[in-house]
Structures are given as C-alpha cells and as structure tokens.
Image (tube, rainbow over all chains, first blue to last red; front, side, top):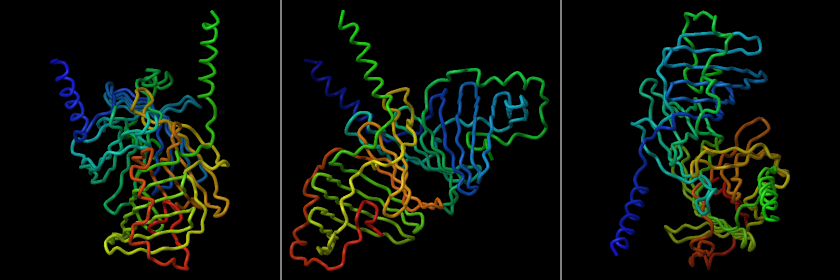
Length: 215
Length: 215
C-alpha cells in the first residue's frame, strides 16, 4: 500500500526535475567529432575533424577549407598544459612548434549565459525523430563579442555556435555533428616523431580553439 | 537448428536495409509545428506556428515577424482543394477571401533531389543525445532556384530548408522545430464564421506555402 502512494510521489518528483529551467552545462570531457565553420566576412568555409580532451587539455584539429578557388589544409595539435602548439605537415614530414599561451576553453555553456528557449529539432511524437535542445546567448567578457549556442538537453552535446557583433554581423557560424564519446586513438594527442627535434619558435601560435585552425 | 541459422540471416538483412542509401521521402500527412524563416535579402525574420494537412490539402499559418522596428502579423488559411485563401483578422473580425490557384506542395524530398550526406546532429553514443538526418540538394524546375534540405532519417521530419541562387545568395532559410504528429484542433482548417459572408476577390492570393505568409 505504501508503495502505491510512493509511486505517484516519485513520478511527480521526476517530472518536476525535468520541468526545471535548464542550467549551463559542460560537454563530456572526451569527444571526437566533425565541425563545419563558416566565416561569412572572409567568405571562408572550413570542414574539420576534431579530437577533444578536456582532462589532459588537448585538442587536435584536422581542417580543410575553401577560400575562393583555393583549397587550404591544416593539421594542428594544441597541448594547453604544456603550452605548445604543433603545426604538422605529414606530406613533407615537417613540423612547426610554437608557444601556446592562451588558456584551455572547455566545450560548455558559460555560467553567465542567458537561457533563451528549449525546442525539439524534428518531432517529439516518436523516438528517434527529434532532439531536445536548449538555446543560450551571452557576451564574451574579453572580446565583447556576442554568442548564440545550441546544445542538447541530454548529454550537453554542442550543436551550433554563432558569434556575432553588436551590429548583428556574423563572425563565426559553427555546427558540430557526428560526435562520439571517447577518443578512439589516444595517440592523436602525441606529436609525430618528426616533430621531436624541432626547435620551439619564439612567436606565439595563432590557433587557440576549434575555429581558428585555418585563419 | 534452422532458427539458429535464420537469426544471423535476418539480422544481416535488417542491417543491410539500414545501410542503404537514403531515398527521397514524404513527411507524415498531418503535422503541427513551428518555423523560423529568415529572408536575408529583405532583412525579415518570421516566426510561425503552422498546421499542415496533406490529406485534405490544407495549411494554416499564423506568422509574426520583425521588419526593421516594425512588427508584422498574419493569419492565413490555405484551402488548396477549394482553391481559396483566407486572410483572417480576428482583432476586427474581418476576412479577405482570395482565389488560390497554385498546387498543394507536400512536405517532402523531391524525387529528383540529390542525396548529399547523412550525419548525426549531436552524438550517436547515447540515446536522446543525437538525431540522424539526411542532407539533400537540388534545383526547383520552375524557378531554377537551388535548395538544400535537411530531413530526419526516421520519420522524414523537416529540419532545415534553404533556397539560394546560382550566385550563392540566400533567398530563404527556414528551420522547423517542435513538430508533433496529428492536428490537435481540426477546426484550424475551418474559416471563422465572420468569413462566411465575404465575397471572393478577383485578385489571386500571394501566399502559397509556409514561407510567403508575411511577404
């Protein structure tokens, strides 16, 4: 009898916890995935395969893009704890090693982001036909750039990241997809052997996140 | 024993049917949902609630938008079988009744669309954290406009519809969300009583689909 009373109490507790306003969240610490980045100002479109390790604070980004008729390519390994960035060129087995002085930026909704709204991409009527996501907006304190973020409600997976100016000019439009939990090959964060003997350059690296690999 | 042999055969048949190249699909015939439409050329952004009935060939679109500082609003009922379009103004209980001579356009991937690629929005690692979608492109034979479509793999739910010119200028960017199967209130397709006595105008209506309600 007690159990019969407890069931609706537990159910209502579960339902009320679902109905709460979403809180800023952090993505899982180990992720692999793909990324399309558009820089409308530079008419540059970039396709990336990325590897993300928030535990070791490592990022590997293999990017190719089209700038006009020219195809450009980059393979960057960012080791934030060591403060080193590698530009890797497999075709001629060369490497550039630069200081990396910016802090690691985890994939997350900043704590001061403003919750905009929750929506279902697709439909909630049948399983597998829709995805519950949250939309957030805010301003980066350092650059005063505005951002718009879409992350999944369950799992805090990034979907869309948009940066724009006060005049509503778009700086970056990025969409994440094909994300998987974990890093299949942990060696992606180990620089290839031909990087070993390379001297550290004095000039700081320009790549600091997923978006700047080809800039 | 025969069953033990049949199980892997059936499994491989099921798996191979999943691995097939996606075919153009048609969305469910009765849908309610929301839509954001951007017209970059006109600097117009429209928010819509829509009701879609591909069986009776009816569409109801309630749209509001911002054009500069001005907020605009429209409530349109499109009865394609009857060939009539109603512009409904509840605030002063008036109605405009126009001929609707364009054919009903179902929510679908056209049969001659080219399959681009399949992707998971979010992650496939855990249930509820990702959505399997297909991307398509093609050209509208009549207008020579190019389109880019994203629909869900399961359920053929529309997500994104983009129309663009040969010069890559964006004409329409629409995103569908919060879709549900079925029409909660079938009376949305019945014109209100104050439309009954209105005469049919001679000029054809301008609204022919989800996108043109506020144009």
